[in-house]
Amino acid sequence: MLKLRRFKQEDMKAVLKLNENFPPRSRSKLTQAQIKEWSSNPDACWVAEEEGRIIAFVFGEVKGTRYVVHSAQVSLERIGEGILAKLLDKAIASTKCKLVVKL
Image (cartoon, rainbow, N blue to C red; front, side, top):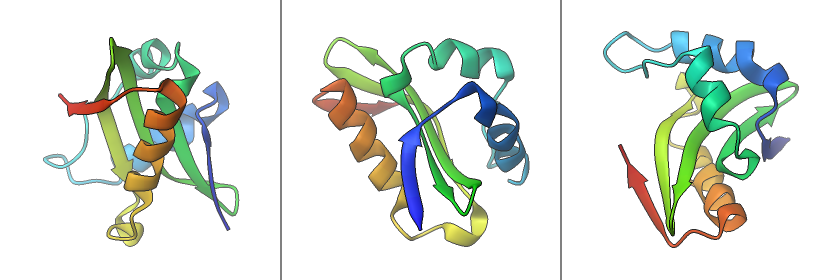
């Protein structure tokens, strides 16, 4: 069963591993330092978990009424299922932002 929840520091390795599974041109240039900085607002960073495995994530920050997406990915075998859209909906609802911006 799919579970959407806030990112926890214990998720760091799983998120970085998921990111590494993408071809170099497609993956985010994601570092532990960036994740730590972005996750200072727990409402802005979410993961999708299934059977104890992280299968998607979204990291962003709040700037005024905007939710700025810095990095978002879903595992290759789950692309097209709407998981990232669900994570974005969670982030927007919990931050009470009105607009999503992708950098």
